[in-house]
Length: 132
Image (cartoon, rainbow, N blue to C red; front, side):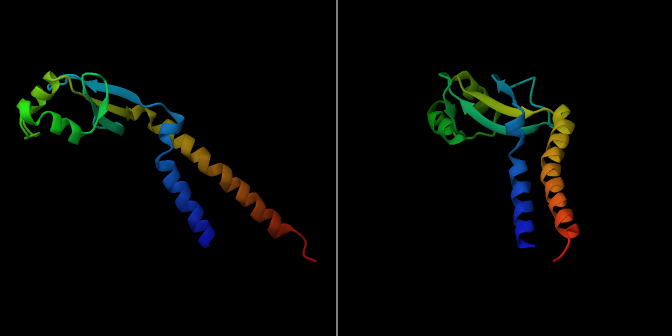
């Protein structure tokens, strides 16, 4: 039972990161503070990060440190967001749209059914094997 529980736990946590392996996420780059084409709320966001004017990937902390003098430190204001975009920063989000939901469900079901059938076959064979 312990082995079964461990295999089930590994399969569950493995499948949480699996969508990035069998589907390339779409990319959205926000270039203005009033981004009109935002990522839909129903999308599964894989990664979100900032890029500077040179296209280098930056964390929010890097951006805040670089913009502390020209833009201030209050990241919650619209003025800070506008200043951030004016200084060449862009927010990038990688996401899977909601129309991939069933594709992911069927793929994950297949991934889980293959070992289930294999282990079921082993169990039936061992059960029906004549005893000596």
